[in-house]
Image (cartoon, rainbow, N blue to C red; front, side, top):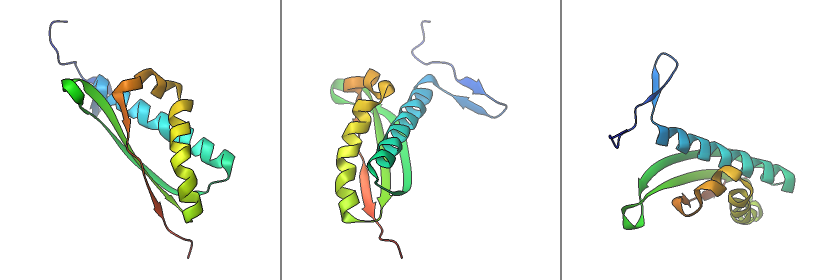
Length: 115
């Protein structure tokens, strides 16, 4: 291929995704699955999880994948545990391991005590 732009991949009748968008979806899904499995295994109840992923220009103009997950937990204690779970989830995920220096995970945690 001589063009730098990839052709969209057709998924169903109304969805066209570019290869880098599929990579972002795979990485985001892998992080979510790894994180939620680790949270369940360590007894950290997660009340909510949302995330976004995008390919952006990184240092030196090289592309990088930025994942921005957001988690809601019920206590400050759980919030403290979440920071370590993020690091573990990135190390645990084979998919994220393939991205190495091209991956940026920018998580946030919110505490919302049960009513």
